[in-house]
Amino acid sequence: MPKKPSPNLIKKHRIYLPWEAANALGMHKQSVIRWIKDKGLVADQSQKPWLIKGSDLKLFLGERKASGRYKLSAHHLYCFSCRLPQMPDGRIADYKQQTETSGMLIALCPVCGCLMHKTIKRSSLEAIRAKIEVTIQQASPRLVLPDEPTSTVTLNYGAETHVKTQAK
Ligand SMILES: [Zn+2]
Image (cartoon, rainbow, N blue to C red; front, top):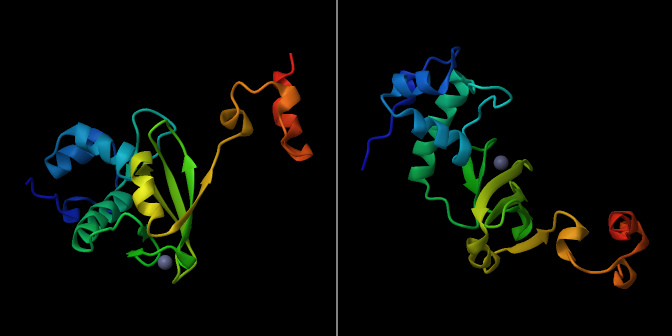
């Protein structure tokens, strides 16, 4: 198993480009990019190259260590305020489909009331629903009824504006 880089290698008040962060940590640039894309490392992605705040990177490296210590169960989410994995408040969460195969699990922290997010695979949703109640949010009515002609749509009046565009 590769050793996790130490947050001590990063200067808190510096802004890093991905390859600079990788150099400082003795890692490959792709690993840093993967952290940003998949693992929740905060970076300014509004322009290229992406910019990473030293403080965010330190936090991220610290959290990786922490989440290794407290193994995050499928139905727990990490609360950034408590800095601990938490069971969703009331054992309920929302799931927002984002791609074909994955989406965002959203719940409230029972301790501090903060919103917690976690990207999960669609395939792991059933296992999570066995433990907690998950409401699945659909992006729009058009995704639910892709081929339905307007005349047979029985949505309420509030949703009518969403289907009008299909009338032609
Ligand atoms: Zn919390």
